[in-house]
Length: 494
Image (cartoon, rainbow, N blue to C red):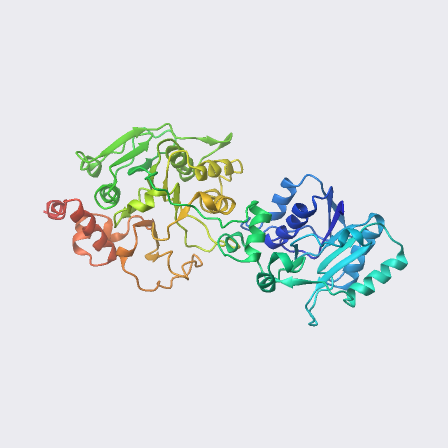
């Protein structure tokens, strides 16, 4: 078997998941002693740090070497292919095309001094450098020209398939390589029962079976609510517990049907609406809130809350909710049978296929997803709110899709008066997109999360709730009715 793999990277662009799969295919199938990454420009990373597969490759394969190409050739040209043959002429080895994924080791490759498979595309846009070339030993310049001519003229009955062709052919009799012509994301291969998806799962996750979380036969998430109430350093008196916070706790107990709500904080909330919760199943739990994570100082209260909620759920399990979340329907028993439950966020974040908002987060104690998420905080950006809190939760799910269930109705996030149901196909939008969503019934969701403004005008007070006639006021009155507190509307206004 070839001991050295030569991978030629052309141009100044991002190293995407399909490129990573290509290199992984050579690693898994050949177990080479060395991979040489030839480049004119090293891969670039997108502004939101999604395509970091090259960084993952560097950290996961010890014998990865880099060699800069002195001459810049046009990508896909014969000159690029000839450059690859120059490297192979020295000691032999495997040349792997940039978008080529090996599916198996050809049976006769070890018996022949020179073997190749090329693209089966015949259009003028065909990339001459896409394919596989095996060479057992080094060879002369004359042989190099002979080999180049054979490859370019496609004097071989062996071709690399397209993805859709490989799905039909299957791994047994199919081509030894697949050329990926479009972007692939990990989520594209988790559950499809296709040959390519199975191959990709084996290459990246080491498993051929479908990757999904399984519902258990027992309730693993307790009906226990958690909320954090953190204050800035040096503050001696807590901030007021407002009407929206009052509705949030009531909805957790009487709508979502949680048994108890624990408010974890450094100072106990104060004010009229906190006192109104006396007699409810609500307990304040003193919390020495985390100030650092992996020896990195956290100045932002939101980041401290991200860490605190994860640690609280790790210890106790339950349902975490931000203080600006209200529940509109009962949490079904079946949803409590998963180890962790997450919900997507709605703003578009560059290359990220999805992100998660953990303003509502359900989990059993000591859940694997929580443990994996905490480990990502080794790379902590205190100045960037969404990286650790929104993007990395999705990354953890991407790494471990069998550890969490995605419930798109868990929360509807409302931003500047527009609510974004994550079960709509077009729910991901630019943050400045002010188009209203398609019509939906607010009862279709489990909870609403009011990010900006907080609270919505209709939920600022009982007076506003009584006089307004919009979706938010309907939700507020529904909560008071379910809690048996409708009298507040008259008492507070009277």
